[in-house]
Length: 299
Image (cartoon, rainbow, N blue to C red):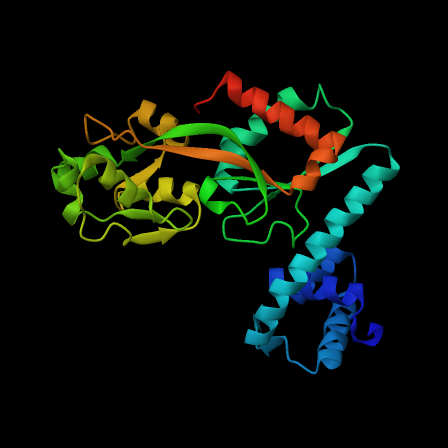
């Protein structure tokens, strides 16, 4: 079995070359010579008997096999890094908690609140990983995730955290161009779609008692920040949690094209394996999050 496990140095070299698509830049990152990195990748290819890169003149490309292998290798390296940090923290007598959270929620809501967490819990280390697409919480070694209720995995416990009002936005120019006055005017308007919340437009129309010919069609984006940017560029109308666009609305870069918004809210929950409740460090984080959200139940 061990004969089929490649050298960690080979895997790190492969990942770095794949990320940069450059042997020289990977070598600089790893503090190795270019020839050393090239030899490590070649040794990995020889062991696998698989070509990982297409070496073209002045250009390096991943093969299909290389791209598939890279996805697996990155997960393994990330989990190994997280396990190492947990072991180091355990030796130092502190607790570590690995949390998966969407990029936009992390930047706009979670990280700014950590200024209140760390002074009260200096012995806890948080390992924060952003995830936009689906993943296996338990299988990838996460202690918890913060997400919407429709993403709760089977067998997991969850606690309500907070909610946010959902709003429809577009640029003032976009509103005037399409003559947006009421929800039904969106029937012939390009809609921007957040890929991880595909039912949001449909739910919004349902709350108004309206229908739309294609509420799930339109430009598909995997991060809220990209949806906001597309809306600012006038690519379409967007539907988003209010706190993501409050700055753009206040500045007038985006507007709510309708006077009466639908009464549609999104909820966020803390999701975790039930056995994590026995961890004092996890319980401290859970209690703090719940307390923070009780102070501000709507974000």
